[in-house]
Image 1 (cartoon, rainbow, N blue to C red):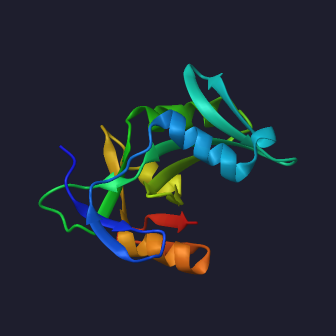
Image 2 (image 1 turned 120 degrees about the horizontal axis):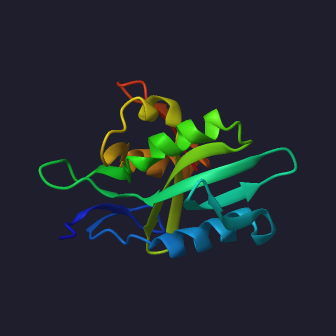
Length: 164
């Protein structure tokens, strides 16, 4: 059941309300809107249907998940992205096969039209992914990105996040 937690309104004030999680298709549509349709596509890579963002120099696989409240008994400001266990094997296989992709773990936060992307820098998370591990983010981290354009944080476990 979806529980109330802190949310950021378009005027940057806080709300206590239910998460407005985007479906995977809505997340992709949102990323296309921000990144440009000409740079984005969905394609099968190593048996997984993934979102690919291409620039002139590099191709990125954006493994995206919704940002949502961690749940009771956690504080209402603490959110997370669930990292499926297949992410680890997928990243290892990309490396083993020398495929020229930069794989990123992307969280997509949404509330009343406010959208924030979180790039959970995968290296430290890959050491821990076992079965639906979580990558955490605080509502203040999202607020800092909305206020300043982007925000970088290293948590006490050495996990890095770039929020924009």
